[in-house]
Image 1 (cartoon, rainbow, N blue to C red):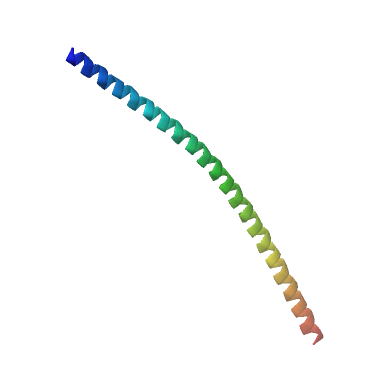
Image 2 (cartoon, rainbow, N blue to C red):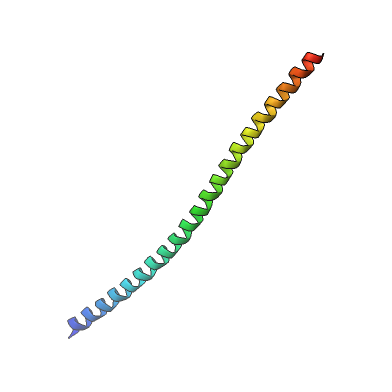
Length: 78
């Protein structure tokens, strides 16, 4: 009889442990989903920042060319 009670107690402990592990797994899955969403947002922001950087670099080159043209015109006048 004692052996049966010990086995029952161990079984209940294992069931509780299994339930706790399932809850932990569900929480991790939920956190992972949130993490993936945050990662997607960060990737989108990075792509936007990179696109803005490319635009700024093109603008800078354009301004640089305009300044060079103005300097050449001034040299031609002077």
